[in-house]
Length: 64
Length: 400
Image (tube, rainbow over all chains, first blue to last red):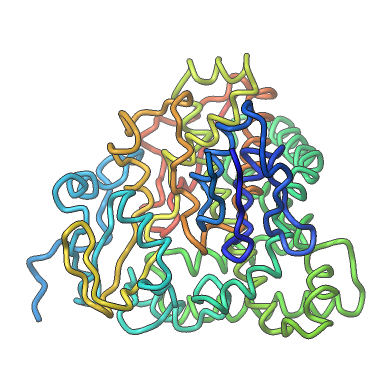
C-alpha cells in the first residue's frame, strides 16, 4: 500500500491522526497533514483505509 | 409562487431520541425533499448520506457563503445572524482556507491529547463539587455547562467567570425563538468582548490561544484584530454549546441503558466507541450545514436550479439505513466511522478532536465516580431543546 496526501486539500480536521497516528501527523505550524509512513505495514492498512474514508476533504488516497 | 402544499421545515420531533419522522419517511422515496420555510420561501432538504457527502465535498457547484440570495434560514433571527457573519464558517474558498489554516494547529490531535490530563482534572473537580453538593442536582448546570467553559478558558483564554455571558450570546444565535434584534445585539456583544480580550493579551500575553494567535498572525499582519474577534466569537460559541448538549444527552442515554453502563464501567476502553456512537445517535446540530447551488445540478434525479437553497440534515444522514444497520438503535460495536455529526467537506468541525477528548474524559469520570447515576425525575419531565438549533436537554436532574 502506498499512501499519498494532498496538502492543498487538507483542512486540518485531524481525523486521520485520530484513527492512524502511526501513519499521519499534523504540522505544528498550521495543523496540515504530515505523512509519517508512505508505505505503512499491513497491520495498519485497515486504519489507513478508515483515514481515507473519514477525511472530509478527500486529501488522502491510496494505491494498492 | 405558492408553496402551501409543501411541508413546513423545520420538522417537529415526535420522539425526543429520534429525528423527526418526516426525515426518515423521505429517505427511501424523496431523498431530496422540497420544503417551505417560515418566510414562505422554498428550499430542499437532503436526507441521505450519498447526496449529502456529494454536496458537502463539491465547493465548485455548491456555495456555503452565509447570507447570499437563496441561502435558506429557519428563523428571521437567523437571516440577521447570517448577514452579519464575519468568521470563516460563512465563507467559501479561497478565503475560508486562508483563515481556517491560522487556527487548525490550535485544535490538532497532538495538542488536544496533550491537554487531556488537565481536562481530566477539570472533570474530576466538577464531579467532586457535584458529590459535595449532594443529590439531587442538575447535571446540566453542575457539569455539562461548566465543563466546556473551563476547558475553553484553559485553551482559548476566556475568563471562566464570563461563561454565563458567553452562553447567553451562544443561545441568542442557536435558538429558534429569539428576535432578530437580540440575535444581532448578542453577536456584536460577543465579538466586542473577544476584542477586549485580544487587547488585554496584546498588552500582556499569556499561555493561551488568544496570545498565540496574536503572536503568530495578528502582529505579522495576516489577521486583523477585528477579524480575530469575529473568529474568536465563533470558537467560543461553538466550544460551549455543542459539548454541553452532547454531555447532557450522552448522560441521559447512559442512565437509560444499564447493560451499556455496566459494560463501560468494566471496560473503560470501550468509552471511545460509545462516544462515537452517541455522536452519531444524538447528532446535535439540527439545521446546518446549508448550501446554495451555484449552477443547475441534478441530485438523486431531482433537478436543482442555480440559486436554490439546500439544508443538509446531519441527524437524518446519521440514521441512513443504507449506511447503518438498525440505525435507530445504539450499538457501540457497529462501524460508525461514517457518521457525519461534525459535517463533511471544508467546513467540517474544527473542534471535533477537542469534543471527542472532552466527551471521553467526562463520561469516563462520570462512570467511574458515579456508577449509580440515575434520573431524579420521571423521564417525561425532562425538557428537551425543541426550541433550539442545537439539540439537547435544558435540565437533567440526577441522583446517585
